[in-house]
Image (cartoon, rainbow, N blue to C red; front, side, top):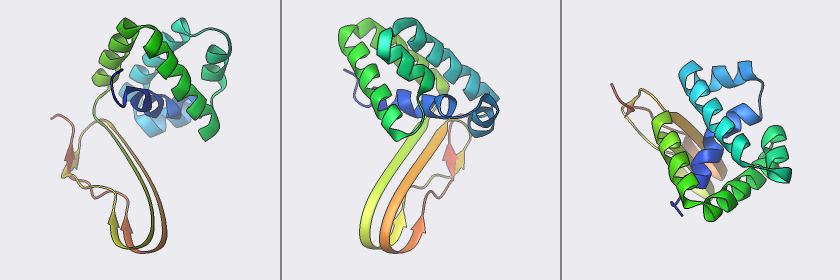
Length: 144
């Protein structure tokens, strides 16, 4: 199994399975939305039963967790399908997911880059008793 691919698939799909199309376009941008929609269609064509139903109604973290488990199961059952999905995700562009959960911290930084030219950035920070929390200090991410 390709490490982290299941998480990347859910990160790409989360905006389109948990929001209206208009909100998803606003979040992802038109080009990334169309590519994410293509990924969603590939999974819909592959999934059956409860996995397909979850894909069509996923919203909120519990449904997205189930989606990740369904994606993992599909990859375990068919390595070629996993490889095809990996190529699709790679074409969508750079993706950065930062998850921080901390207490009693100073100068918390989710990440830093000079430019963000394409791709997707998702930062989730839970910080109790923290000073100077910065989700992401942007610089360069993506291709020119």
